[in-house]
Length: 120
Image (cartoon, rainbow, N blue to C red):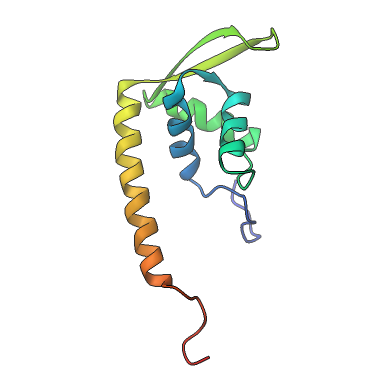
């Protein structure tokens, strides 16, 4: 869903969530709630993963062959779908991480040490 308001700090840019999910699953299979918690905890709570974004992303990544899933029992004894990174997903993670690093470096170069307007 496209929002007309400016993004708030902590909102995840479109496309970035896929990278974060793939990276989280390098540690092993996990269900959606755990994936969201790991992203939030690892980012020191700077990033919040909404269920309305997480589950469509998980399904999209599974459709692309980057994740596989199977039903199991969660730590609180509930039925849950566990997602696992595939070999194809590992390749995509490597490529996406490289693209992310190049983009953040380029933005960092443009911003420089200061974001103050010139002449002030």
